[in-house]
Image (cartoon, rainbow, N blue to C red; front, side):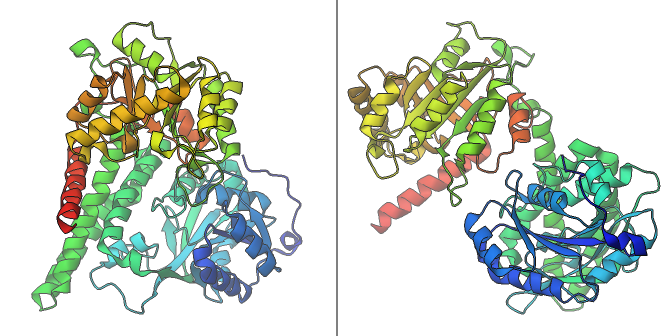
Length: 589
C-alpha cells in the first residue's frame, strides 16, 4: 500500500498543481541514456517541483546515481524487483499532486511537462499521456516494422488519436496521473509489467483501468503536445524481439483481464484488431502492388504480430484457468480431474547475485519462507510426496514441498532457514561439483546429512548435462555415478533424483529407476497433484523476479498448469534441437 502521509505543496495555493517526475532505472547498461533523460527534465519550460530517480535493486547503479544526480532525489526500490514496484516506490516518495513518469531511455522535449499538465485544469482529468517517437540508435527505421506495431518498441503507434482525446491508458514512457488517484487505486500491481529486460508490459493499462473505473467522470487524456523520444536499440528492431514482445503482450493482456475483466481490459484492443489492423494490411498490400515490396513484408508482420499476441493471450488464459483441459490430471484414469494442487517449489541459489535470474536474495527467501509456513500446508520431502503419489503413504490435505537444486555454497544456510520455519527441504546435489569454488563442500554435505529427517539429499547427476541429449551409456554413468558418489560421502541411501535442466525422456526415466532411485523430480513449471508421475514430479521454479503475490498464487494452485503425463510437442522440439547440436559438434570435432 502506498503511503498517503504527505504535506501540501505550496503550488496548490496559486492554482498551479505541483508535480514530481519519476524515472525508474535498473541497469548500468543504460547509464548514458539515464543521464540524458535526467538532463531533459532539467530543461523543461515548466520545471518539476522534484525529480525522483528510483533504482530497481542494483546497488552499483544506486551508488553511481547518488554521486551524479545531486539535484534529484535518488532512492532504492523498496518493493519487489520490477518496474511496477519501482514506480510504487517513487509515488510513495513523491510530494507532487501530479506524478509524471519518464522512461530511463527516453528524452523529453522542453515542453513535455507543460503538455502533460495542461489538461489538469479540468478536475475530472485523472491522467494524461503524450506522444512517444522512436529514436533509432543506428539512425535508420526498421523498414519491415508497421506503424501499427510501434508499441512493440515502446512508442506511439498507428491507431492512437492524433489530437487531444480521451484514451483508456497512456504509454508508460510518457504519462502522468494525479497522485491521490494512484494511491486510492492501490498503486501499480506488482507481478504485472516488465521485470528487468523481460519484455512484459500493461502495468499502466491495468492501473489506468482501475483509476478510471473508480469514478464515472474520471478521464485520461491523450495530449499530443507532450512529446518524448524513446531509444530503439538494434536488438529491439529484430524480428525475434518483435515476435517475443507480441507473445508477451498477449500474456500481459491476459493478466490485465484476470484483474479487471475482459470488458475493460480489452476495450481498446477490439477496435484495434477489427479496424486498425485490417486497414493496415490493406494499406501495405497497396504499397506492395505499387512496387514497394516492403509493403508486403509489413502486411505479413501485422498478421504475424497479431497471431503471436493472440497465442500469448490464449496461453496465459489457459494457465490462469488451471492449465486448460489437456493439462488437467485424471484421477485413476477416470474422467474427473485430481483437483488437489501440490505446489513443489524449486530454488537454486540463495544469494544476492544480480547477474543470476535464478538467485533469490536471502531477505526475499526469508519472506517467501514465512509465506509458505503461513499457508497452512504440510511440508513434505520429495520422497514422502512420491510415497503418497504411489499410495504407500497417506497424503495430508494440503501438502507442499521445497527443493533446492545444484547445491551452491549458500545451500546450508538456506536449509537452516527453512528448518527454522518448520519446513522440510530436499536438496539435489551435482556430485561432480562438490568442493568447487562457490559450490557445496564435502564437509558441508556431511553436515546437511546430519540435520535430521526433514532434510532429504538427492542426486542431480555428476556433471549437470541435458541427459536426454546423451547416449544411453553416458546417461547411465551420470545417473549411477552421482548416486554412488553421494552415498560414499553421506553414508546413507540416496533415493531421489532431479533431472538437470528438467530434461528427460522415457529412456532417461528408465535409467533412473534402474539405478535404484525411488522418486525423481522434473521441472515443468507446473503444479503437482496426487496422480503425478513419481519419477517426474512437477516443480515450479522460484526466480529472483518471483513476487510474493505470484508465490501466493502458486501455493493455492493458481497461475500455472497442473502437471501433465504426456510429453509436450515443444519438449520434443527442444530435445531434437539439443541432439542435433550435439551431433554437429561431434562431426566438427
